[in-house]
Length: 90
Image (cartoon, rainbow, N blue to C red; front, side):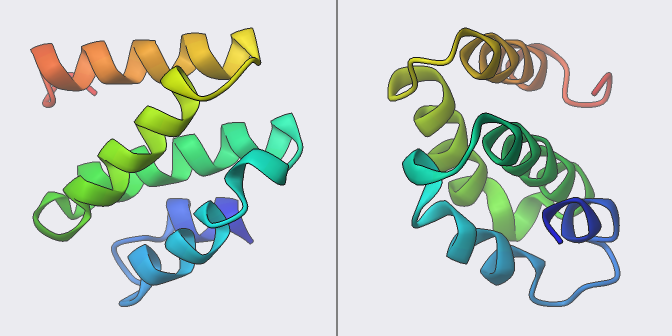
């Protein structure tokens, strides 16, 4: 379901609310779900930046500062740096 929300975020009116419900238990999710939540949230931000900036910052913080998983942390840093330097390239 997380993949669908991220992929079709421009068509789902409450995509940010749906992803936010998953973020409540982010630390308890498996690594695969955490990676997909990170990707889906970044996709949402790229499609609708006006309403999802805070959500994206929250998930990037969870992935980079509060995670012990090196894959998740590295992907979070890559997204963070890419979005900070050139959001259009993302």
